[in-house]
Length: 77
Image 1 (cartoon, one colour):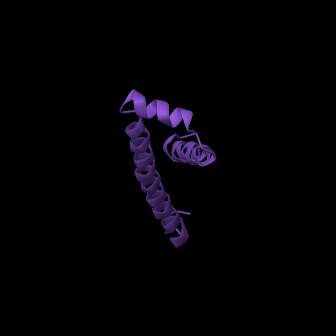
Image 2 (cartoon, one colour; image 1 turned 90 degrees about the horizontal axis):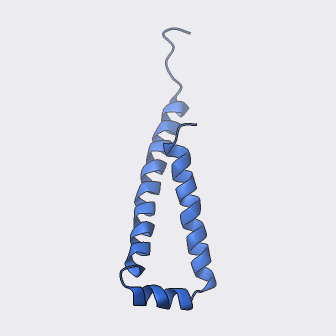
Image 3 (spheres, one colour; image 1 turned 90 degrees about the vertical axis):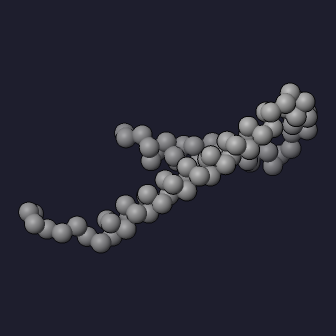
C-alpha cells in the first residue's frame, strides 16, 4: 500500500543484521590474524603441525562456520 510505514520489527532486523555483520567481520579478522601469527616462521608452523590437538579442529570448524555466515550476509543470492 502506498504511504504505509515499515513495521518496527523490520527495522530491528536490519539493525541486527548490521550488528551481526560487523561482529562477524571483527571476529573473522581476529581469527585470521591468529592464523597469520603461527605462519610467521616455518619453525612455528612445523611445531603446530606436529602437535595438532583436537581443540584445534574445533577452532578451524568455528572459523569455517563464521566465514560461511559472513558470506551469506555479504553475497547476494
